[in-house]
Length: 67
Image 1 (tube, helix red, strand yellow):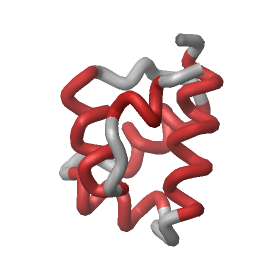
Image 2 (cartoon, helix red, strand yellow):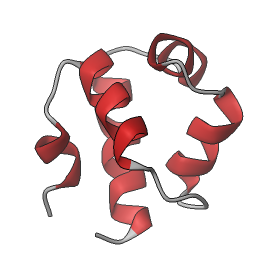
Image 3 (cartoon, one colour):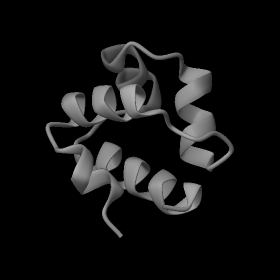
Image 4 (tube, helix red, strand yellow):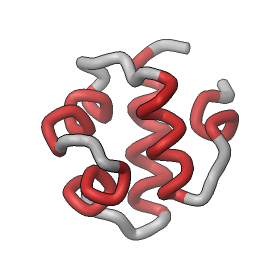
C-alpha cells in the first residue's frame, strides 16, 4: 500500500475517534514526530507501530491497510 493512502486512513480514523496527534502518539507509545511523519506519508509505518495505533483506535490493522 502506498504510504499516502495509509497516512490518510490513519489520520481519518484518528479524527473519527476524537484523538489529537499528541494523544494518539502518547497512547500508542510512539513519538509525536514519528506519528506526524507517518500521517504526512514521509515515513513507512512498521508493523509493530501499525498494531499499536490500531489497538488504541479500537480497530484492526486490516481496517487501516485495506485499499
